[in-house]
Image 1 (cartoon, one colour):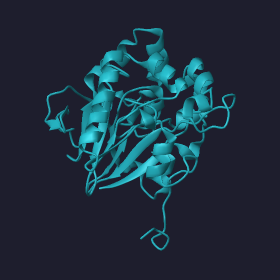
Image 2: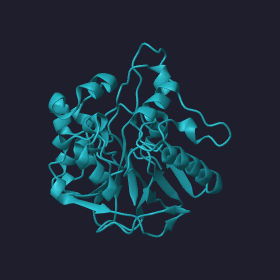
Image 3: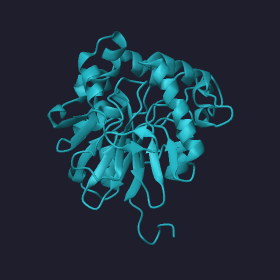
Image 4: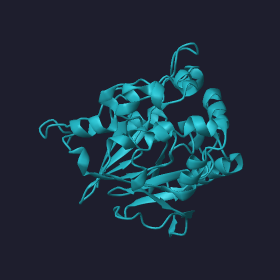
Length: 292
């Protein structure tokens, strides 16, 4: 399988350096990625998370809460949506048969509308929490305006085989077996990571289980104060969130050569894997220009 790394619209939160540790000021806005994966399998295309979509770009006020628009100020650009990057790669978006979601937050599910024929795979507990929308925060983070393809959702509980000591869900219906969903509860009640087998190891997209690369440091893990506060604000189960961060660090320590762990929003992690700036869309590279 071939994996493409798509930044499906950066967010630019207030706090600058307090958020991303690389912006040169705390009065400027920072930059966080929205790291999605496009996977070429031997039978179809699979998208892991969908980022913001065309309708979010066209009319964000009707789709997203005013609070999060002001706080995060997404860098809306049609060229950075998943569907447009997939087209630039030379694919037909209708060949995206499956979308595997880490969770249903607005910045991960906005592009679902752009793939009306795709089956969407997610945890049953995530669907249930999103439909309930019990708190004000839930009503801001979960946006039914983005769910036009809800009839195509397939939901899962636990009960699958173990994945390096983590529970995994059973095989996703119709999805290549080397794409694995792993529950990582905490950020939301139905949050999951998604692991993809590469030629020699696994890439494990941990979604929003953590936000900053140094949270996975083995000796002295740390996080910027802005992202530490944001994670606290957004968490649904603090004990489970911190427990799963500990488990991810233990996984990295024990299986460094077998698994590469990344999150959805650390821009340094994204640019290292993608090999390009997060502001540049993925696009087709002619064979004569492709790296050896």
